[in-house]
Image (cartoon, rainbow, N blue to C red; front, top):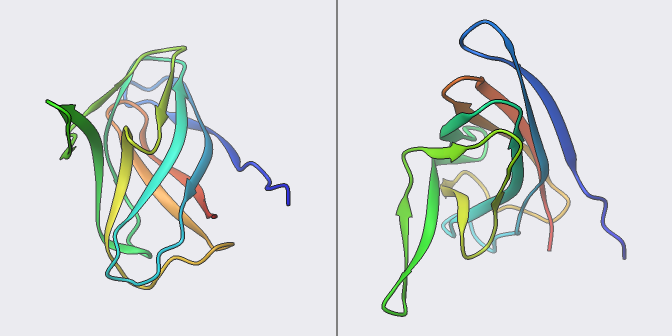
Length: 137
């Protein structure tokens, strides 16, 4: 079965008063068997002006939402909360398994395939930007 790619393109108002284009592509998460199982959201983001991703929220889905980065140190994988992801104009930053991702903790209900939910990204310049996330296998 061919799955549709969710592409969301948003125009956000920059904090300095000008327009900053922000494009978020293919936002998705895997289903979870239980609400107690954390989930991760993956996507690609590109900005027209340099910006910093400060955080994210999904209050209709999870009590806690954090931006994380998976790191490898001496062949040991660990995950750390990131308090600012630099976004360089014209470059695509990929949030993917084994790398950057948005972690959803204390889910209000399990995530089910086919479900869609809103994730709000908070950026230093562009402010809050809402993205639709698709839950898929």
